[in-house]
Image 1 (cartoon, helix red, strand yellow):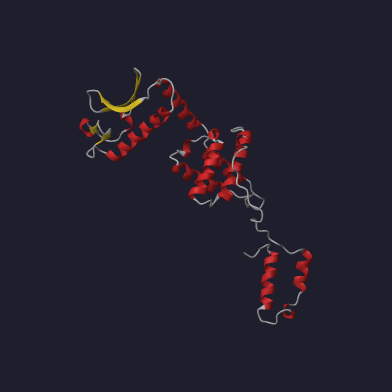
Image 2 (tube, rainbow, N blue to C red):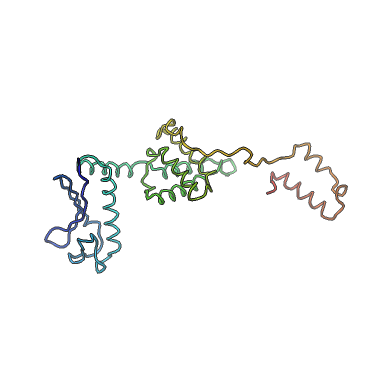
Length: 265
């Protein structure tokens, strides 16, 4: 049975302070030097090998410790389910980082949809459709990923899965008491559809997603007047219905709304 990869920091060298990440498994050892990522003039006495951290007296100790924690976490997360050699794992991490650098993330894809909507304008300069809901979806997905200890800005659009989608819905239901599901579901469904069109994901994979559907009767239907009803209202003498000083004012107010395509809220 293959053993878990052992990962820890190790100081080395005789000239000044040098630090590297050591990965060991079944006789295979790999080293990754991290000194170049650190800040300040660090000395050997600043390093605590037992705690694997810099002491408070170290220049930029908090920043440097945060750098070490984040750098090590990347390899520990990969090692959890890794089956194979350390060299193979390092190659996989390199490929992943290249995809993130040059690939399109979920957030990046949503932003491209927003950019495209902003470009579509009527002759008078007004926008065709709305993009605010997509921006709101982007913020909610970032919030969801943070709650799950996921790095949202590194998740590629090709990694969008029905498991991810359904877990987002469960998160909204459990932590937000369902608030926002009515717009998150259709917006996410739209993003999936656009991703399918672009060839990033397959439509059939999302057939079993728990897409939110409005219950019958939950949608408020707005009743509007016909042209004939509007004409009769304009010709109507308000004093014949209510002989008050405000009746004519109310009629004028209603006509103003009719002519400007406004509705009462």
